Length: 263
Ligand code: R5P
Image (cartoon, rainbow, N blue to C red; front, top):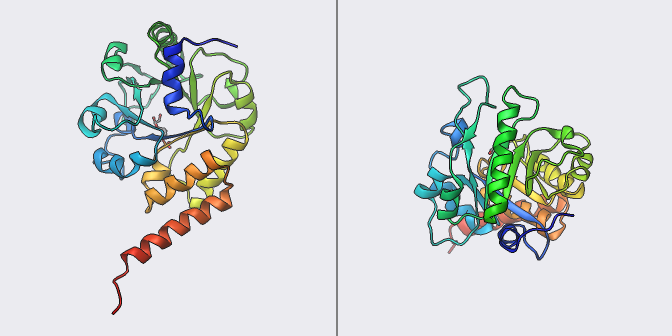
């Protein structure tokens, strides 16, 4: 068991809530490689309505400076890797785009970078990770590794403090083999709300400490209903069925509020 410095532990506990040991992170960092993304074209508008239900907000430096009110006290997870986009064939060709000094100046609670195991730039991205972890350990800054390595993560300590990955078959094995807290990303928008709640519920049941979810929340027609239902799974042990009930209940309430008063 690794011991962490007080500052690093303190930063982590800002967004992995000590009351439940879980976390609902809102991912809004897609623009750096996807460009204008449906329902994230104006990040401030997307973020504003959901920030109150988020334990952390994952963004790039540009979105942070332009679209996040510095008076909000939601912890920030700063995406610090990038340099390529979906217009290029190889997404793994990333470098570090934001320095640790900037991360400290922006008073963020963690930095995040992608690592691409098995891809052409595997080595560079793993070296980026190693460098960031060294700096993070010195400065008390948690590092979240965003990885799609799936089962390959088993039994491999990649040195970071939090891992974000995608749900996959035998997910519990991934969690068991991961020595640090692991959160699950949502991925592209799923067909139904029930599918999203199943994904979140299964990930939590199999050991994830939470979600770092974007599109399946803010591309939904009721983003607030969606994030509230996800919170119920993550923090209140709700199952997928109960989350769907919560989602529908919130929508019903809003519909009633919106109805014109009858004389
Ligand atoms: C991918 O690395 C992006 O950084 C997103 O943060 C991540 O995929 C989570 O968002 P979504 O739930 O939309 O997949």
